[in-house]
Length: 402
Ligand SMILES: Cc1cc2nc3c(=O)[nH]c(=O)nc-3n(C[C@H](O)[C@H](O)[C@H](O)COP(=O)(O)OP(=O)(O)OC[C@H]3O[C@@H](n4cnc5c(N)ncnc54)[C@H](O)[C@@H]3O)c2cc1C
Image: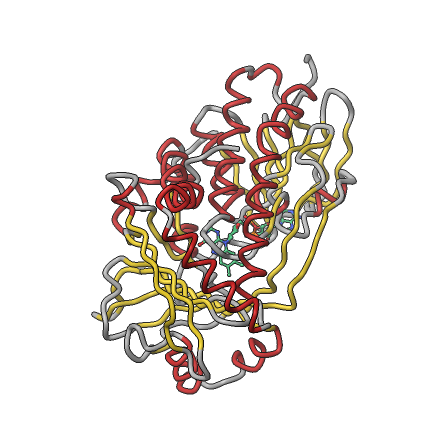
């Protein structure tokens, strides 16, 4: 190209997706600058720590291995061997229909491994510290984007400018770089929010992930390693926004009591073990995954309700697709040909999953009795059919492409 570039790739956003992309491209020898206004919080007890946890499904593990991140994580992995889906009805929640999927039906490995997000950040920082190819600049944000056919120029909050052949927007659901590139989104809401937290409980989870459906939205418990000598699970509790706001204001004891009731007491009384975070539930996707000299990944490209552990796993698929294209033709980094190929390879898979999760969420949220019965019958019928069951499990695992 002959022009002086400051790096091969500028990554806007150092959330889990952006930092993973930095490690993946840095490990492959690309020169990366990654910026984020916020310093990563790598201690679960610290104020502002991300209380979400992420189930890394089998294909995600391969991406993490190649990026040198897995070795920093493996000692903390809680395997997910069985997925249990419960439909709960009645005035006080009671299990009506229960279905279990065992990973052994399709693989000699578990479905995936669950990690607290703050721990993922710690592992990512440890990996980046070993990579001379990656220049991570916490405390800095991207402020402007100017592109031409041959390069992008990105303004940073410290007043400097970066010239680069490729910008990766990993700057979240309100992505400033996506907006600067003029790429639209399609968005819809459900009037729902999610409260995320961890609990300890007397009855062991035995590596079973449990999703309890009831009007308003699912209550999902995902195994975590023991905490203070007690079995421990991460919880995502989706419900009407007003109910979530009310529960956020409850003291720990009353909150734990309501959570225990909602969990149908399947694990005995639950005890709140961490602060609570609240998240709006939306579905959103970018109209295109690329623009001139820019590729969108992760929540900048797709946001969906936290069901079936799709979000970050799709993001890692975005990263590995981009990396594969970059390695095929490194001199062509960020060209229209490469970015068109990226859009083409990822868009239909993303749309399939966005629509599938949207349907599942609407069915789960349904409050009309007829829809509720359909939900119970539907779950029952779907999960009873071996081929459908296998396909759903493979989709859940991300083993099926497009
Ligand atoms: C309740 C809940 C539970 C979930 N559970 C799962 C799960 O089990 N499995 C799964 O796969 N996924 C799950 N997800 C989805 C998953 O958390 C996200 O897909 C994942 O965190 C991707 O985030 P991200 O890095 O794109 O965005 P973010 O984490 O929002 O990161 C974006 C980053 O960009 C930075 N930024 C913003 N503006 C700028 C700028 N101008 N310049 C530079 N940086 C900027 C921000 O500071 C931030 O750090 C869940 C989501 C929710 C809400």
